[in-house]
Length: 129
Image 1: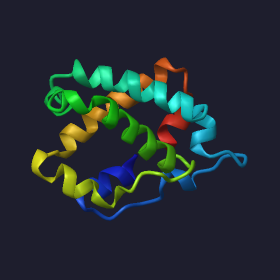
Image 2: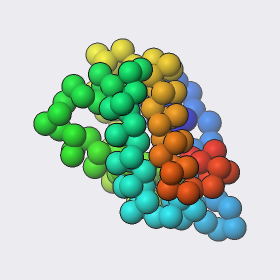
Image 3: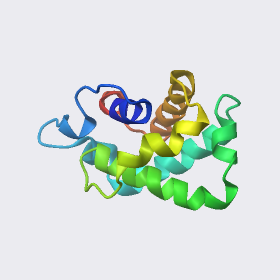
Image 4: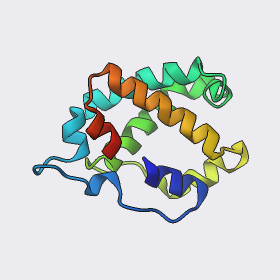
């Protein structure tokens, strides 16, 4: 998800997850497909709601939670080698006024990591994401 950090914070980026195939399988394949991404996002979102470092960002738009989760799934699905249906060109603009820092992004990634482990995604696959 480092390319997401790069897009969000307007930085140069390295090798994207969609380019990291192992034995012909994308990260999305190795995660278990889009349904597992949906489950990971659902679990991660719950973790973020309980995480005092980032709770504010996830509570602020309670009426948009379903839409935010759908966009996160679409973003991750495309980033992990699946079909790209999320236009990330506006991501920085949308998040600009939120003052998201590396600290906050890392907290969300920790929640992603924990959610992925709960879904029994292998550590090397999580690392490639």
